[in-house]
Image 1 (cartoon, helix red, strand yellow):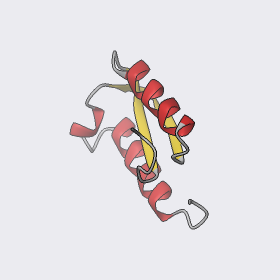
Image 2 (tube, rainbow, N blue to C red):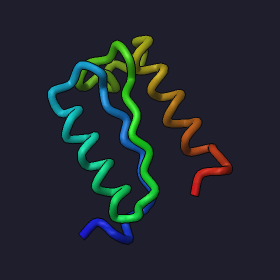
Image 3 (cartoon, rainbow, N blue to C red):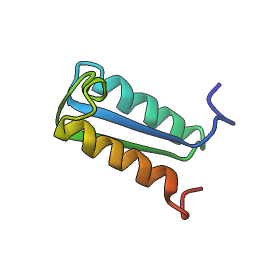
Length: 74
């Protein structure tokens, strides 16, 4: 049961064998009425946030911070 889950940001890596699963999970959350944003980071690979000083990870971190700080987010 996915209804009642908190709002969610799913940020997938572009080159990630799990990307399709993240997209499917985001779709299922949205279908259950959970406000969910599904994004992908261009040029990134699975685990890119483990190297926070790379350009891909820095962009992802900036996107996550912006999503958290967005006053229009539900």
